[in-house]
Amino acid sequence: MNPITAESAPVESGVSAIRLENVCKRYGSLDVLTGLTLEVKRGEVYGFLGRNGAGKSTAIRMIMGITKLSSGSIYLFGESITSNVVEARQRIGYVAQEQHFYPWMTPSALGKFVRGFYPRWSQQRFTSLIDLFELPSNRKIGGFSGGMKAKLALTTALATSPECLILDEPTAGMDPVARREFLDLVSEQARNADTTIFFSTHLIDDIEAIADRIGIVESGKTVYEGALEPLSNSIVTYSIDESLYQPGSVPGEFVNGAANIMQNVLRHGRQLLVMQFPYGVPQNPVLDYGWVQENMTLEDVFIAVVAKSS
Image 1: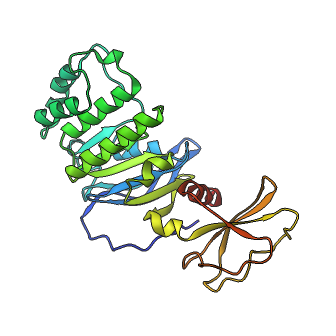
Image 2: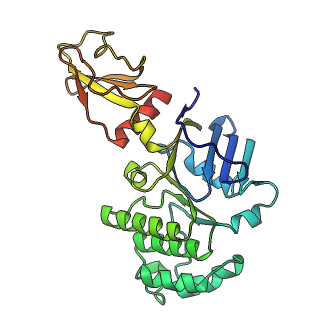
């Protein structure tokens, strides 16, 4: 299936922080990625969305050079990842879903250990972020909560002065308050430093407030890439009581062009028809008797796109 696309300004050659071209990954007979293509522009916050098992973490491990590609190409800062993966990784800050620190280390000891691997390490930034995040610098990390470890991982990643910050499900397991605080810190700190952010998650709320563009992956390939607004403005749900629904009927006549039916399901006694309009959802359409337009969240839109691509 061809990915849904949104109109956007053309990307100039050489300005992307990350670019994947038809990337595939196979483990024996299992195809995890089946032609993933995406581009992350410098200085933007890019939301990498997909349900669990869609291939997001596999893609990130290949971007980081941890896992080898089966086929396709990956470029970091305009250079193929195969040319010098070590140098490329020194320009990237990485926060994984699960934090693995030596439990006997303190944040102060961790900073001294890590800085030798990164030529652009900023001890001043590391110290200031430790204070900002209210992390005890001389307490053993083994006693930290999950949220504290996530903040420490972010502190360490930002102290490397990265050109690109990759976040792989960093808020998984956090309570809502800790998650919101973490996201605010990510947005503020990265934008102040003009850092590109590649944020992988299946939590739509994490992305909605901070992303400039998104890419949705399903079954190992990109099914949408573009801004949030055009996607949200092109999809709508109409519903009708199941007693009034006639199989094959649509809500009404639309003058804005033919609609693509994405879902047609029965839920809680109402027939739901999820439709996509190539020129935007019609405003104040004339609906046939019984049909009403439903409010949709970004999560509803995401589910519709993923369901149609399955």
